[in-house]
Image (cartoon, rainbow, N blue to C red; front, top):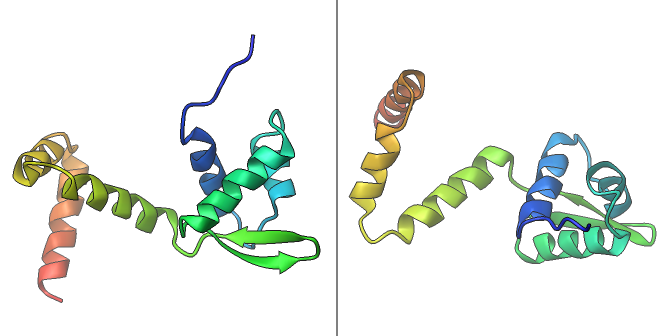
Length: 120
């Protein structure tokens, strides 16, 4: 039986790996660590697409490219949140629902960040 990854799952795994590295990585390194069960060309294609989407930068390293993330995970996740919020019909309701589901610690951190932002 062949199990398929959900759409975007491989992209997510590749991004997580790249974020964790201190230096640019090649598709071969990602293939070996993230998806050795897939064809090397599949991983290479995903990395090329992430580059085309602006999520990865790259430079020539021999015959291959080495890739790195121009933004960290926090910036990427914040962008996803902004995109989701901007596509909502009722932004206030979405924000309210989000805040209602925060833990006490998360709510306190959000309050701290908002206060810090207001004073800057």
